[in-house]
Image 1 (cartoon, helix red, strand yellow):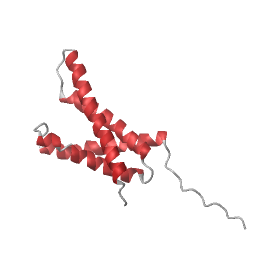
Image 2 (tube, helix red, strand yellow):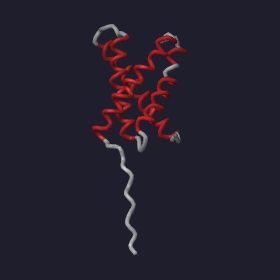
Image 3 (cartoon, helix red, strand yellow):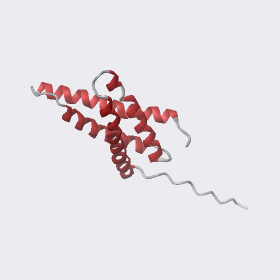
Image 4 (cartoon, helix red, strand yellow):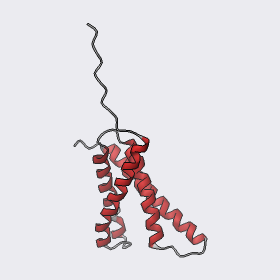
Length: 129
C-alpha cells in the first residue's frame, strides 16, 4: 500500500486536535460548574470527538478508506504515547487503549459512508473512430 504521508499527517492531526480540544473544553466546563474532572468524563469526550475525527478522516480519504484509517489509528495511538511519557497513563492502559482507538476508527469510518461514498473508478471514455 502506498502511504500518502501528507494525508496521514493531516488526519492524525485532525483526530489529535479534536481529542485535545475536547479534553481541555470538557475539563474547563466541568471545573466551571464546580464539579470534579474525572477520567470517565474525559474518556467519553475523547471517544466521541475521536470518532468524529475518524469520520472526517474517512470522508477525506480518496481511496482505500479503511487502510488509510488504520494508519491514522496507528498514528493516533503512537502520538498518545506522550501520555505515558508525561506519567498520565500507565503503559498497560496505553497498550490496551489501541482497542478503543480501533473502535473509534471503525465507528468513524462506518459513519463516513453516510456522508461520502467510496469513489468509483471513472469508466473509460469511448474513442471516436
